[in-house]
Length: 102
Image: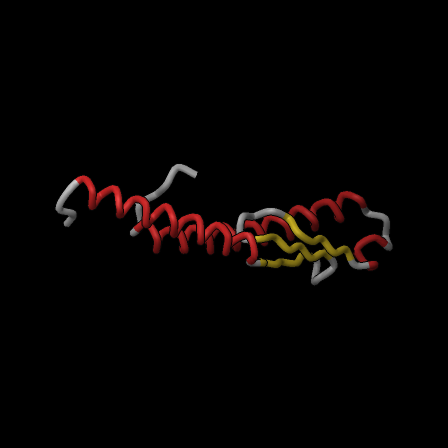
């Protein structure tokens, strides 16, 4: 238990510093997912930003644009979910499970 307002401020500053460090780490992490048996691969960073998208030749050979769009959406969505799950776990450890509004 904190003894004074000063202790509370110091703790808040420590958590803020740790949050900044975590955000830096997250932007350097990578999460990938694929769809269509590997025809489409997406890579996102720890903040769910798309960093790479690879489309295999087999994905475009039949000219099925709708299928390709679905594969892209699926791969990107899966990679983003993996990244978000990791981010939430890391933030939960930092905040003691307290949900932050972002």
